[in-house]
Length: 277
Figure 1 (cartoon, rainbow, N blue to C red):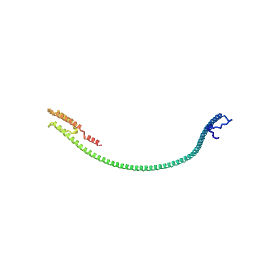
Figure 2 (cartoon, rainbow, N blue to C red):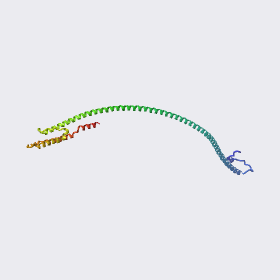
Figure 3 (cartoon, one colour):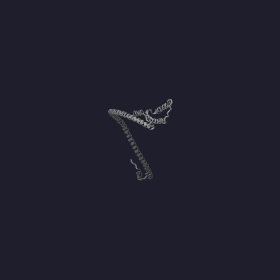
């Protein structure tokens, strides 16, 4: 009897014979035995279940261990491979960087040489253009300077001619004005003097002293008449002589004032030269 079922134990029947065991005791014992077997079977099942769980856990642990071992192996191999690959990639990157640096350096040198060449060519071209422009400007300035000098010479010549013509015209005008003033003074004096009185024509330069000459002349005549010959009565002088002196003095003063108000020819010529200079 390898497999004992508690239910089978409870349902087990025996033949009743005389002089055997007590049936009730046997039944009670069988029930107890069935209960014990059932408990044992339950515990056995629990143990089996626990064993299964443990086996499962062991299997899982073993699998995890194997996986961990594989992971460790893989990690080690991966580490070595990663290191090797990293070294290879680093070497490749270093080589590529070096090659790129070499290309960039060569390109920079080439561009620098090209830029330097173009800069030199442009500088030379600008220098040549500047020289040509400077020569053109200098030539134009020299030509303009020559033109200006010619214009200055022509202007000076024209100014000298105009000055000479103006001086001649001014001199002639001043002479005409002087003659006209002389004639006017003579006419004024002629109107004031009686027909029987002597006529004196004053010179324009001596009009300032004409009254003194006339006064001295009249004074000499008066003295000569004051000393008559013995036995002769002195003749009385006409009253017109003092009036003539007064008239001459008055006309001379007025003419002298008119001449002082007009500038002289030398003064006008000096002003003209200062304006021309």
